[in-house]
Length: 235
Image 1 (cartoon, rainbow, N blue to C red):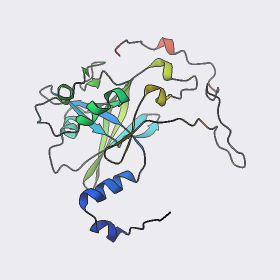
Image 2: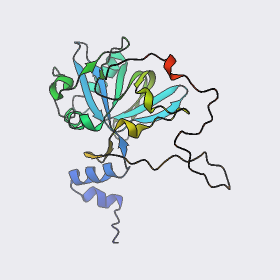
Image 3: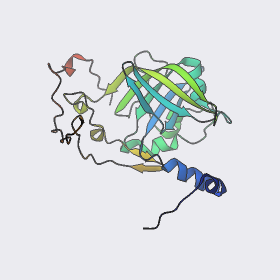
């Protein structure tokens, strides 16, 4: 096996598109999400984002990176105006439509209409969800943090509501993401299906963590009754 070594100066000599693809691939697999927003005229906007991260569970916080505003950024502008957005997981059946939403459509064109996805206005929220997505979240803006070194923005929001298939939530709260047929992203345009290896028990010093059984940790007593949460047949 031959290993290539790049210094930072070496990277600067590479063609810009080659360098962008190389660097974007280094962080590994990322989640694929469609961000739903709307402008003041009610035009529903949709954007593919691969930078969503979980920041905490109490309160439930998520963050994502928005690129520099050297060109029109409808998603960030809409978030600033209305303070809300939706996160919608991308599954294999809608992958090509989701990818197409990254095209540079005019501001008065809804990406939902352009790519053939359905805007779902839920819970009185001022941002549309994707009806075809198996996992959607409504997010309220907490803060926008400027990253001065490269002029990106780290957008932080708090979970307002969650829509997810009940059958993929295990008894200990773990969500079987793979059962939702979701895709992962590598680089800028590589898409992957996943293969679950399993779950390992909580790690403690001087012990080897065993694999958990399929039903999960079994540490939630009494069990959470998921039937008490509102049921909707929207997918």
